[in-house]
Image (cartoon, rainbow, N blue to C red):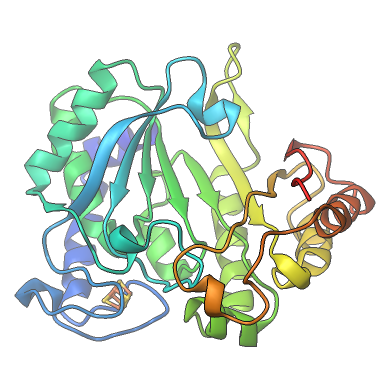
Length: 304
Ligand code: SF4
């Protein structure tokens, strides 16, 4: 793993210190709250100093290169830098339900999942805990941790924060949620999402390249972009998919998801109160094919 080289050279320690320094007036993500998280002040994400997790378990429902045959060691972080009206995990992401852990305890979860046979450690919604996760990795390496790190994110990321993760993360799993900034604000509280997101996935690709798998089809390095199709074209699929092909390359792996359902506040939010229909998902599949994107996963059409 590349993170071993960072560990051995002292670079991982330097990045952990830099990350913690930024928590004093937190600017880890584009929300730029400026709160002192070292004093447990909280900003939009609801996160303080200590990492808080909702669960740490083997998960088999991710894309095949992530779940493989033995499952992905999935650690759900509490809180989120977005506030999606349709979030399926509202109590975890927006109420910050979970358990505070020390960095050493988080490292113990990582090593424990490795011992249980997980192919990787899959941090879900990790951005606001970037320094704490790097610190946990440092401790975990000392305890024999060696499997790939997956960064499973909304894609609302600052490039300067991603640079802290260069060589730390093996596989990026970002969302590309919107092309319309007004929708990004209205539905997810994410100003400037489109350009921020596009810069983020470009930086991720620069760091890890396109997806590479081992002989068993298990991902070892690279990026998979997730795109959740929303009703009425509100995810901007016909804009995002050609952009990916043109700017990141047609070999980019895409998971085109049809499973949207109106969770949390979506039932009372105009335009997203219902599931995606077969026609809408079909348009997104057509956009994928027209763009020449052949790597990845398309789901069954949603039932009418
Ligand atoms: S990580 Fe949290 S506190 Fe920091 S800028 Fe982002 S939303 Fe605000």
